[in-house]
Amino acid sequence: MVFLSEEGATRKTLITGGAGFIGSHLAERLLERGDEVFIIDNLWTGSLNNIAKIQSHERLHLVVDTILNESVMNELIFKIDRIYHLAAAVGVRNVMDHPVETLDTNVKGSEVALRLANRFKKKIFIASTSEVYGKHVEHDLSEDDNRVMGTVKKRRWAYACSKTLDEFLALAYYDEKKLPVVIGRLFNTVGPRQTGQYGMVLPGFVQSALLGKPITVYGDGTQTRSFMHVNDVLNAITALMDTPAAEGEIYNVGNNQEVSINDLAQRVKEMTGSDSEIEHIPYEKAYGPGFEDMERRCPNISKLKAAIGFAPSYDLTSIIQSVIDYFKT
Ligand code: UDP
Image (cartoon, rainbow, N blue to C red):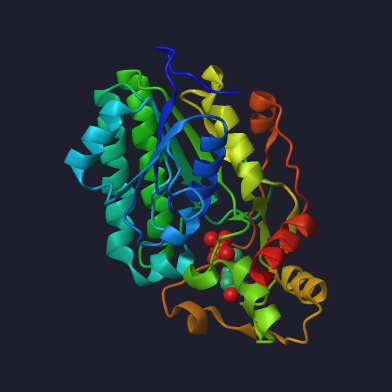
């Protein structure tokens, strides 16, 4: 099916961060369904390799620049129909190592994207994060839950706060300026093309296991996460953007199958048939001082189900397998 803009022309979609892990998959998906796709990416954590398959596609336009460049963003947003705003600082290691760039990109970059989206009244998807919930341990996380933030001295929370500010600003534009916005809080998204370079656990574990290097679990490994395959994320966020009732709303975008990091390490070791040792190392050694982890993170996805009839199609085994297959090839 080819999606058309309101005027009946091919729909033009801008993906900020379109050369990143999620953005590049989204670009492929949108090209497949007939959109003309514009990507802006400064290649900080994005990579031309991610879009090598589609770079010469006739409906793909790539701009290598920062989203902080307002004149470039103005020109792009003027000519497109809708925006997926994915450009952000990603990866706990990156956030710990580059706090200034993290805050600049996530706060100022989103401010630019939203202000210009509003100037031309273009619908925008804001990719937020499960980090905004902070240090909850008690229950599955629902969109209206309070946020439990750590001290400002712990750098990790800068990321959560910057993304929270993006959400506040997006809702403010919706309420005050009638800008159509949709907010998705993405829970640990994984799949082919994600690199372990910026701290993400699953690609790191799989690479170590395949190379016979130690699989390093940070802390005692009892902390949990819920992993979602990138294809499921695309199903959810494209459906949300096509659902008018989702405007002005926040949705958890995740898979509610929770796993401890110890169990994840064990499963990766078994599924790769690796001889790697599973080692535990303290957080300070992994990230330096000023780090605090989240003990538990599992989404309640009933709001997403109610909005778009969503159910994750990948379980944890098929998710891990897809990452193993990616690194093997
Ligand atoms: N982690 C780990 N070993 C690694 C990388 C991460 O044990 O090599 C842990 C990390 O401390 C966290 C979990 O795995 O508890 C998920 O980490 P990731 O950075 O992938 O995502 P996030 O912390 O943002 O959920």
